[in-house]
Length: 317
Image (cartoon, rainbow, N blue to C red; front, side, top):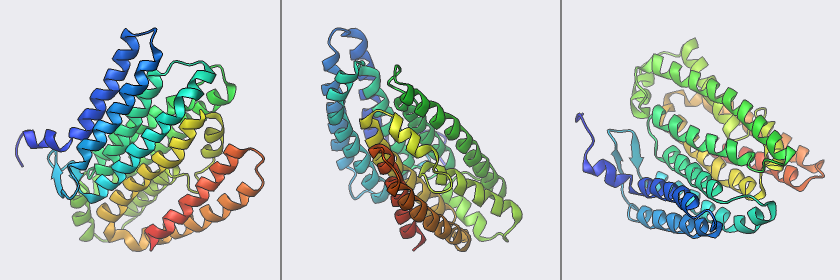
């Protein structure tokens, strides 16, 4: 493998670079024009439109970049369009809400763009390190966004619960990834797939599979790892709740597909059974719990949990 990055590596991540530059510009505009809080909205929208335009140039491309850390393919492009459209709609929903709540918009839009950037790397990542960095970029942004309404006690509670449970699930996921590295000798998904294909099933491999599945189940709010979702959905700002329910869940499923379909096809008999039970539990508990809710946002949270079960069925199939 070549010992450095080439111009092509930067070319293939132009959408991510544009999004990063746009996010930093939002912060700069918010700092320089403190009396013009309305300027951050157009900068954010222009950033998302420009990123989408750059992404459109990669339709039909199927290659890897950054020394095999990222895949530029139809799968990644499809999910990136979902993230960008969802972020655009979320930003359009936000100005009136932020005005009513009396909070500045600069940091808010910056965090929305950072969360979107993390999601895009989650969709493109074909290496455990890339996937984890993308996941944490998204997660840390949402930890802050969930508690963005500082005077609101429910918002603070949502942020703390999300952070504590998210940190715990991240530890579980990272431990599972470290075990995968231990048994395969690589963090690249294709190399992990090749290594596990020639290995006998062992307790270490099974433990790695269970830990990675548990960590991912938290991110998609699958039962029994779903308890954070209703509280966070209820306490977070309404536009953030909408973005959480669509964007972060789509990103988590993109990462789940990358890891299990591309990296662990040799263990398909094991994880199919695991996800089958998760799907049944998630659909059942999600729908039954939604019936008893009196709060609309909590009801939608349980509905979102049930939808995770429906999507898991597709993965199992």
